[in-house]
Image (cartoon, rainbow, N blue to C red):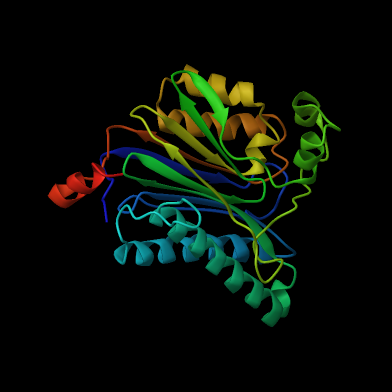
Length: 275
């Protein structure tokens, strides 16, 4: 299990916004295992923050535990995913089960749910998992790209050609998610693996940011503050609130400082010759 402290720098910010009374977002990280998590809860009273808090805590705890038993670098032949991605996916599935069971057994939590997005860095790669419309963006060589695709009604309409991406950006009906943790006994977790390079900058955010600040302005903010994560994060939250702050807003920023390729050892080097 690799410790990525000193190889990836990160910050977490979460803000209630200008309209909501409670903050139902949650963020968490454990860079000793290379994990960042963000969740955006939903539900009456304080149930949303219960769901998002459970999602983050369960995912962090389960990933940490799973990586202790990790078969490093092993690839699941049925999915083509590395073991780290399977651990991340299964941890989120476990969180879904716990949230669902709690919502059914605790009347005050009935109907609660949460989106989730997580990045697990390992061996110069990142496993990106998400459910719902919280997002991951990446800045690489001045190119800004959305890595995840929203699980939302609006995105489905874009995929089917009813809206252009530009029209979707202006739509007021962005918040109908088609997938969330805690709503059903099981859920499909979308997961993908990306290569990672030094100086890559990753943005995890709740829809409180992406609904209120255009992608172009997120990109401009990152460029303007030249990689100062603290300044970027504070400015993104400020922009959100300046534009109305209709929702809670959470941002996790991570920048890759140096390579974190895992040393394969003699056996691994010999094995790699035959792969």
